[in-house]
Length: 399
Image (cartoon, rainbow, N blue to C red; front, side, top):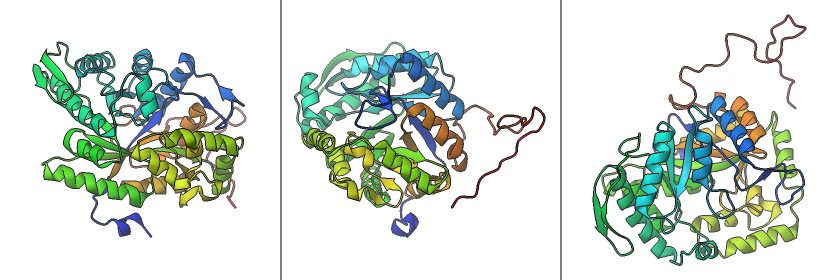
């Protein structure tokens, strides 16, 4: 059954932006093991960022949390090595004052020439939050987030802000150096609870869902659209997924199995125990897709939950040949998803694999990639044969 048949009332996205991911928490060929792991240093992150820039990805997500390198410092270090690539970096209400966050945002936007995107992260791990000195519960965190966004966006717009809320207080706050993007860089935001949906409807530009099946994502989109419409607002939508793309379906599924080759039952149990302490509704929904079991990983056609056995946050991958993966992405577009934030292991090789095999199959937004960039029609794509013959595309028949 097509997604349009299930959700006929949701307006489709005609074009999409595709972002890649900088793995500042680690990278490698396998999950759950140090075997063939890869050191993630500035040189390696620079390779991935420049590959994404060249391939025409809209931007890169840089993760946040104590398991990661700091996203702001990484983005600042890489901005000068890229030309068009945007950097989706996190502000953390409760860990950072809105005035300081506004200055950081304006600075990154200015030094990058208007390439900052902002990911508002409320945080769903109470243990990690307490380690960072943040002791508010789930409900309070969303109250703080709402107050934070209010002050933060007003400062970025150029207002002088005096504010006294339940949690935050500012007197005479002002931003002296404005961002390049006006009124401010776009705000991305995720969360599956009712308070999160309320914040999304009231205050952000783009809501990001983790990679749940289309019907579940559609239900969230419908709820946020209704909440936003009641306030006279519109919100756009994106999704965070992993991808495993190979020339054939069989090869893709074999690669998925290989990715978790060294994940044993104890590793799964240990990871799921960590996830169970979290008060994130999104993490609960991710874990529920597989229940820690290896025999129920394909939750809907070509959507595989194996990554979530050991990885927190986004835990599903689109698995298949290029045409199938592109079709599944278009099914998400049919319910209103216009932004995809993708990743694959290892991230450098998979950026190329997806960028060369799937990106050309997608109706991407006009501003994505290099100005005027086209497929290479002026010369060979591949190595010249016998120093004289321009190669043409040949594919072995898939069985």
